[in-house]
Length: 111
Image (tube, rainbow, N blue to C red; front, side, top):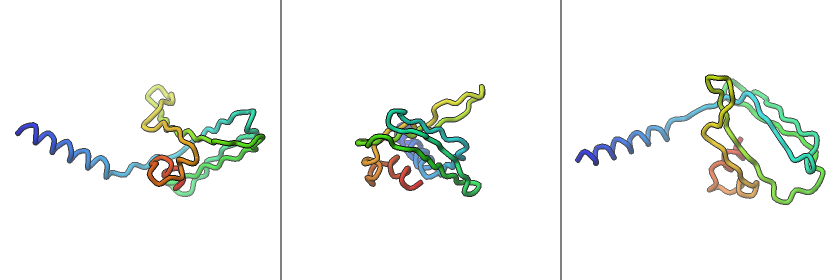
């Protein structure tokens, strides 16, 4: 009986955690590229409103890119003022990102 209550309580807490909405304020973006393939890389963060920001990346492609990949990573500052990985570190190709069942790709395309 105790196990059943623990399972019900755990499932209730998980449901509450999945329904909550988190908002992260984007302050800085860092874009890197392979210098052989991409030149003159620049990233700009533009604030739309208090809760939303857009990242624009401009670059010159020197050679054709056959299988482009995107790496998304969230970082947060800790108490010693250093950036540490937080929550998401995912790498995917642009073709995977267009599919509806790939969650991080859908998030990327809806931004």
